[in-house]
Amino acid sequence: MKPNQWFGTIILFTLLTLLIVYVVPSDSPFSVLSYVFGFTYVSIVPGYCLVSVLFPAENKLDSVEKAVLSVALSFSLVGLSGLFLGLSPIGMNFTSIRVSVSIMVLVLAAVAFLRKRSLGKSYVQSSEQVST
Image (cartoon, rainbow, N blue to C red):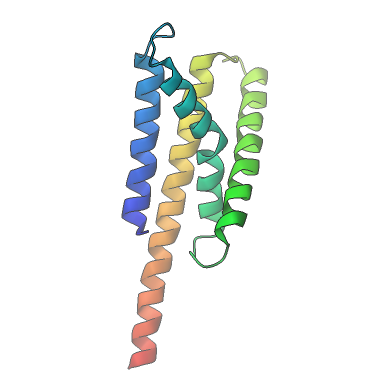
């Protein structure tokens, strides 16, 4: 997937998740969407963004390795975020957790986007030098 498409997908999923979590009331029959999107967002997306930062090349990891690392790193990152929020004067509530995880995902996605884009440029430049 191209870096622009990947970054756009992460931003769109973040915005969609926040919209569903904030707009859908808890007594609505659509509250299941809030749980599904929220769980997917917390358990996969932060780790996937970190894996993309650490391994920007597409062929470095197998898809199973990437999935397992994404889930494990997601729970670790969200746990650390909760620990820091609990120790900070902000405190832990649903809003602070949502905001901190969203900021963490957006920052990691931006760093991964920049790394993937620079890797693509260096790959294009090195292939041009080899062909000349």
